[in-house]
Amino acid sequence: MRSRSEKKRRVYRAAVLGFGCILFAYLLVRLGAAGIASLLLRVGWRFGLIAAIYAGHQMVRTFAWRKCSIVSRPLSYWDMVKIRISGEAVQFLTFTGPFLAEPAKMWVLQRRGFGTKQAVAATFCEYLLYNISSAAIAVAGLMYLRNHFELSRPVSMAANVTVYAMAHFFLLRPTPSFREHI
Picture (cartoon, rainbow, N blue to C red):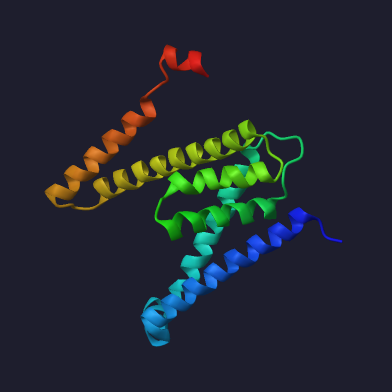
């Protein structure tokens, strides 16, 4: 006999799958099969490359997220991948960005046995590391662009402002009053 929570989980999964199917049907009716095929054909073989790069990106972020968790019994890597992808779905389908996606991931972690502090700490730590590494890559890319290509004045100015702002972000250190609250 199945437990009550397992039945609720199955109903929830069926509801989410149903929502996804309804959304797909809506897009299919709205754009038409020919429109979707046309868009995919325009992207061509690069669609597979883009999907592979995105999947790799999510796998690396999941690995970092799992390493950031401080629980005695961590979830399996693939369970963490499923939670991450569900959070990404919330982010993209609701257009709320990380404001709803990250708390959704924390909530799922809590339901899977993490304490509130562990769920918040793991999610916040991974998100912070992701943003820092993204800023570092952006600074390196903009500096390369600025130094190796001839840019128009407005683009060069925007690149300089962005590099200096991000460099300032890296050089900031927590103030003593901030450290007391940690």
